[in-house]
Image (cartoon, rainbow, N blue to C red; front, side, top):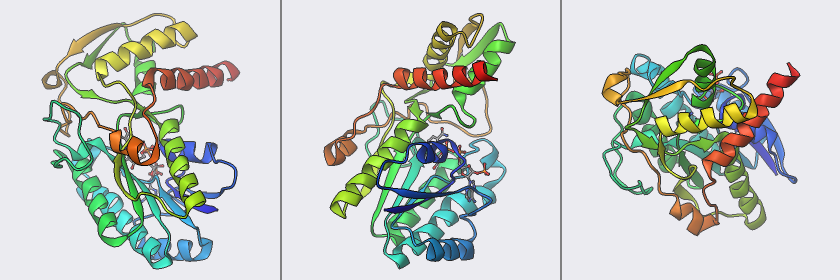
Length: 297
Ligand SMILES: NC(=O)c1ccc[n+]([C@@H]2O[C@H](COP(=O)([O-])OP(=O)(O)OC[C@H]3O[C@@H](n4cnc5c(N)ncnc54)[C@H](OP(=O)(O)O)[C@@H]3O)[C@@H](O)[C@H]2O)c1
């Protein structure tokens, strides 16, 4: 089965290309090779490549910058998805797409289910929600996978920021009143490939909106604590920085973040048998990869 992957240089896109299962012929395009915000280019590339399945890992993901680059965020996250959805529908191919926990306000005490009310608090979440709606409107066979707190060995993320700051500083202040679910880019890629394999085998999928993230839920402070424990054990850090727990109010950012964006992944398990992975184990694999790269350098 021929699959076209957009955003192939991003965290998830990169892992998708690293983990191609047998039986798939995958063509990955980075943002220079295929700009999803360019409608004519999307149509031209899809018509030429003629994929049987499209996976969109491209997105504008700069949450804080989006507050001042509103037009750019919508151009990619809403209009880019519209172009892909229309082209996929015209060619009769399904589209697997990734969205975010930031479509929710974060005011819930319990985990968010896919059909819970959305209320994004920033431009990034609003633009991603607009993309979901465009996809639902224009492409009959689609899966939207909302995920959260993505980390991996490739690209920029919280794990790499903590490692860098942990080497430079004796003390770090990390927010301890926001809860969410760290999710490895590799586990998202594997989940998308499992869905692709079901589609390849059955010619169909239970299309729709699902949640997929790591388990269990934690705070950024808990996540940083585990990063430092594992990094020390692997020799990626020489000393453990002191971790200070702070509130969101003490760490102001241009974009407001949800206080609790824990996602309930049950419907994905019921429909497709996919279960969340323990993020600490995924973290260990990512840190081992980073340690290998560091020791080879
Ligand atoms: N990162 C997170 O914590 C997080 C959390 C929840 C959900 N998600 C969602 O998960 C998905 C994957 O995110 P990620 O972490 O892999 O993001 P990422 O590392 O920022 O990768 C996104 C990729 O999209 C590319 N891109 C940007 N604009 C594009 C355009 N107009 N046309 C084609 N490609 C374009 C970027 O290329 P350039 O770098 O060249 O611009 C980048 O390689 C996204 O849908 C994101 O919204 C992410």
